[in-house]
Each structure stands twice: as C-alpha cells, then as structure tokens.
Image (cartoon, rainbow, N blue to C red):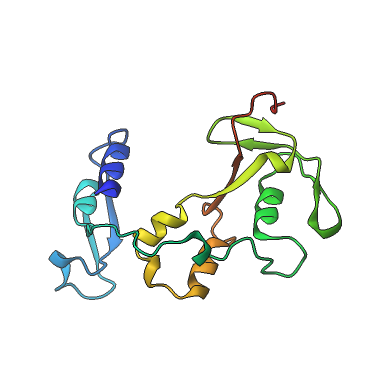
Amino acid sequence: MRLRSALAAALAVATTTLLFTAPVIAAPAAAHRAAGETVTTTLYEAIDALPVADEDRTGYERTKFRHWIDADRNGCTTRAEVLIAEAVQAPVIGAKCALVGGIWHSPYDDVVLQEAKLLDVDHVVPLAEAWDSGAFAWSAAERQAYANDLDEPRALVAVSAAPASGNSV
C-alpha cells in the first residue's frame, strides 16, 4: 500500500489528464490481450491496476546483499565508482582507489562536500525495501547484482553521510 500511496501523492503534482501508451503486462483485467499489444489508459488507472501485496521482511539481513564489490576488477569498489561518477569536481584516484580531493553535491540535503569519507552511497530503493518487494526470492547472485548496479544510473546515489555541520563548502 505504501507504494500506491506514494505514487498517488506524486501524481498530485502532475496533470490528471496525462495519457500514455504502454505494453500490457499481465494485468488481471487485460489478461485476454495479446502479448505486446498496447493499451491506452490514464496514469491513475494504470496505478490502480498495479498489484498490491503485503510486504514481508521475514529473513531480511543486509548481508544477503553482497555489496561494494569490484565488478570490473579495476581496483575500485562499486562505492568508489559511484563517488567518481557523481563528483562535481573529480577526485584524484590514488593507490587502491583511494579518492583524494574532489567535490560532491548531496541531492537529499543540498550539501556540498569535499571529502569522500563524508559521503555514503545509498540504494535509491533500499535493500530492505527490495527484499520486501520480492528480492527474498532472488538468488545470491541476483541480490549482489542489484546491490552493485552501476548500469542503472538512478540505482545508487552519493549523499552526505551525516548532518554536514561544518563539512560543507
């Protein structure tokens, strides 16, 4: 229900007459449609058609999502790769991918930071939420791929690690 409520709140700022064409994705009401067929509907109707299920955090442990790996074996972990990619001013990349210098902007709190150690890399959809929404059924490899997803630029974001009292530019 939280997802539907959040989507409805986001829609409050959007126009209510938006129409879009999207592929039919096995929605109960559209089960008789051919695969790949498109349907035109309002955004509100599309949200109402989303399946809703209770979330279940049973068995969740952050360690089930192996993260901050060095997938491309260049010496930099996923965390460092995100910090490098999101730097407003690029850091110098030292031995063992130590990041020296650099400037980052934290979009959540509008803070500018000058040290990599002052930043966290957040999963935009938190690992626990992913678990609640179905990652409990994923393999360890699938959870690792999700936790280190550099292919989707919106999956991970560099943000200030703590209130920036005195740490901003």
